[in-house]
Image 1: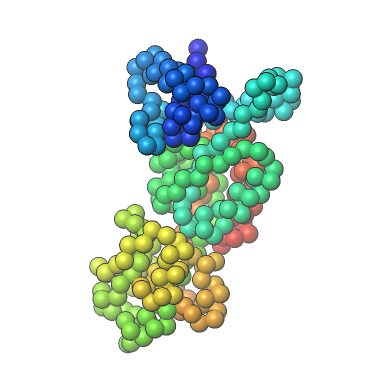
Image 2: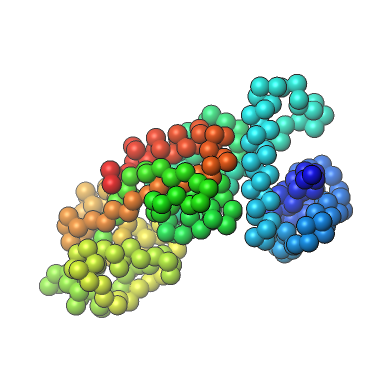
Length: 300
């Protein structure tokens, strides 16, 4: 049988980042938390927590944390129907759900879904950020129970729902266009024109060049891991960038930004993948995500 007291201690250390904070959250002493974690690790013969600042879960520890999320959601559903199960002295512990999304979705439409969800439930969310092409790996490794991803094929053990596409425009300031593309935007001129790149996983500029010219070129780039930073840097004339349509719509309409090649946009299809074990408890979040996506994304 699983020692749920020890498992909850592990999950709380990971959630709060320290043994001391976990102890305060569970209303016990730090030594009690340490003992419970150590006993669980000794019983399983694996390390569950990487001790540090903050403490983080190992791969095995992540699976245990996700199991405790499932348990928490099941307990919440049970107590809604059998409220007499609540210990009046202990109170009802709130469930924190771990989900992943890409930074551009978070900056444009995902928080709309989160807001709708939090109005319906007292669940808490821990949102992790990664490239849309890599969030599915978080599901595979058991680090999250749901994710916004560009992967349409369901991850093993998950349901996948198409959401629509996030549209991007290749934009820059008029001053930047005049400076770097006086004869127009071509593969040859892009070789010298600095772009903006989010991180090493970001391939949007390459995909846009393939769509526009049938090829990509090696080009200089500024590295800037911020969605809003992309817009601000574009306005400042630092580089050209693929910006989400929602964030540059007004700037394009008022001439503060212009498209490198008018009419050549890039649509990135997105999907919502949910662990099947969490599908029913997460139905409210799934409905909120689908609703927000259908209002904010384009039909792919």
